Image (tube, rainbow, N blue to C red):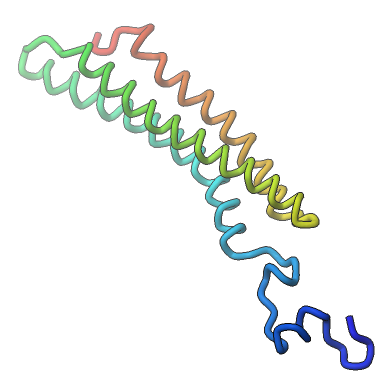
Amino acid sequence: MDETHGTTPAELATGGRVSAEHTGRSTPRGTRAAVTAVIVPPVAWVAALGLSYVVQDFTCTAYASNGAPAPSAGVGAVILATDAVLLLLTVAAGLVALRTVRHARADGGRPLQAFCGLLGVMLAVAFGAGIVLIAVNPLVLEVCP
């Protein structure tokens, strides 16, 4: 900082206009990525849980009310495909969170982004395991009893 004028060298070089990347403050894009990486895994897990129940309950009830045999293999395949997509979404959120941690540490320490990144990685692992357990259910148990 220039003691005579109260400006930083970056402000002098840019005529007083300094962007967030020059000052070391967190950028909205980085903060958005960190928050998204925290929110996506639990939402994906809730979606996997809800969709598996809705698909299974709706299909089995509809076929049972008509007296027809339920397509257990088809229902299981739909649940597995849905869970696979949601698991990939969770893994992608975990990778974004890991990238956020690395960028936050490399940029001279952005504690909020680093915390959100670490939290996002942990949530991606935990909720990813939950999605895997939901996906295993149709493989182990009977889909439409």
